[in-house]
Amino acid sequence: MSRAVKRGDVITVAVSGDCGQPRPAVVIQSDALSESDGVLVAMFTSALRDAALYRLTIEPSENNGLKTPSQIMVDKMAASPRGICGPVIGRLSPEEMLVLNNMLSVMIGLTD
Image (cartoon, rainbow, N blue to C red; front, side, top):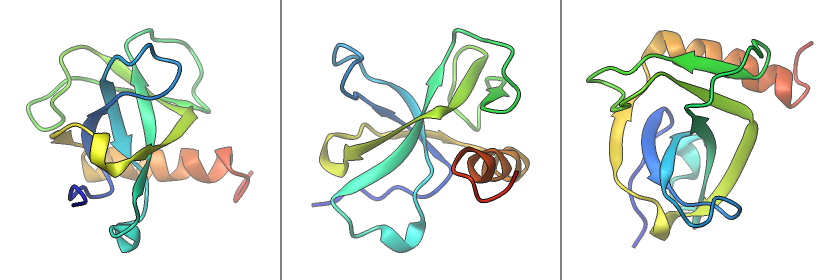
């Protein structure tokens, strides 16, 4: 059975290359694809870097479920089988989603 997640949800997921350790990620896949076996996410990191074009800094809050200041790594998107995704721990704000949408558009070449 597929796990119900929505675009903008913060979940935990273990992806290849992270030694199997679950870490936070934000769902970036369209809600229209909720029946697919996989889910497209952008990973979070707590190793902050000055990279305004492809790293979005998110402060921890009750709404997003993060424990430390983190950055969404727009340059580190991954597809994960829906069945191994962890629970929803939070959600990005509409304002954060707007910035993320713009960054994703630049990253995949829809805008300059």
